[in-house]
Amino acid sequence: MTAIGTALHAAIAAELINPGRSDAADRARKLFECARVDAFVVNGLGSGSDLNVASVVAALRENGLRVERAYGDRSVKAQWKVADKSRAAFGVMLGKAEAERGAVAVKDLRTGIQVEVAREALAAWLQSRREEEEGTAE
Image (cartoon, rainbow, N blue to C red):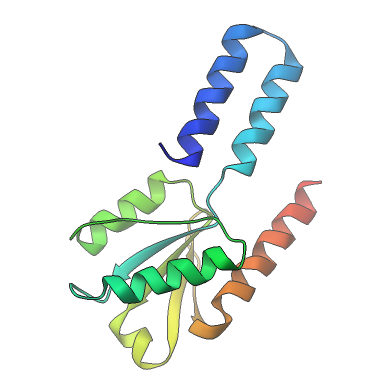
């Protein structure tokens, strides 16, 4: 079960245990927000690139980011569908053209705006966006 699934179950349980109590719903909402995925990595490099994708995911997680990815030989389109369902803030596309430039495409999954980010700057870029969002949420 993903972190989002766990948070969703906690929200449902909180409402069932304490129906109509705003504090239970508020705690569940906070738990759900904490479980949100920062980025979803999409493999556009093709088969045989799993190690490359895994290294990006691991590097982002080592930098404190909550990151998910699709497994198996799913098409890029199918991976984007999973990314949308994951409620991730950003989709990180590892594409062949971007890889040649040492970059990745990053799409804000809420607004649809896409930018190119240098691969070595990706973790810092995502962290700064998360910090901006957390600063506005308070």
